Image 1 (tube, rainbow, N blue to C red):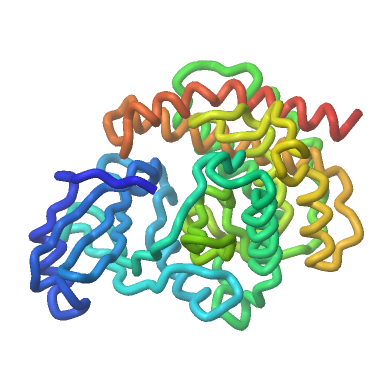
Image 2 (cartoon, rainbow, N blue to C red):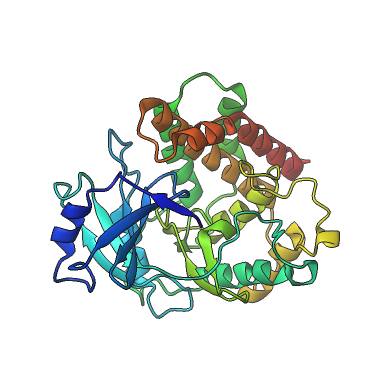
Length: 346
């Protein structure tokens, strides 16, 4: 996870707010902006010998309920000392007058991250390790007792997928720049294809990918799961399907998928192996109509990327050039969602 020097943060204002609350802020303070984090700008803070991470809302006009750093702070605070590894939360500032937006500060977790699910930096014989660890942590997340950790009210009751379809359809329309027929068709078909609510309610991450995880520097143990902006109480299969959705995208820095990769030769888990391992860890026999969940995942990611593109065109993106590249994938995601529905119904 690379970072560059940044002038996008009022360090004097941060230092004044944090002074006396965290160690190191009376010393020389510097900040570097991480290249990742399209939604909420994220900075590495160096305060004396201490390292912290500051995550803020972007500036400008924002879609309602988007960029909820307060929710990120709450869910990660609740997960401290559970089987789901997260950074230690330090401070939440909801006073927008301090730096122009809400922000929070958490511990910096040293380790390594993998931006490419092909894991090219690892020997073939070891590549299954991080994928299986990813599977283990996902199953652990969905086994969290939300009542015990104080998150029973973290999401509304009712049909999660119907609620999410309605929410992201509205978000997509609010960010729409031009007509994309495949996206309109996908929204219409999902209304009739998504499985009926079966009553499952767990904590869901909402953007569970290997590049949102920090691993130990020389092993496969997950040290932290990051980017909880989209977390809520919902249906666990949404997270599982999102993993499979990501892997079906093209390889490379934009798609970050595994499409066309000979996974067996490359030492990588297949979609079915990942699903089977997850079911075994959670004591589930099988998942019916899984393609519909994958189709929904493509739809939601397309809606998210449409919002990223709109912010870039409005001048509010954290990384405008990368945001435009991601926005160009919206039609591709929509068509992939339709393909997933065809496979599920075929």
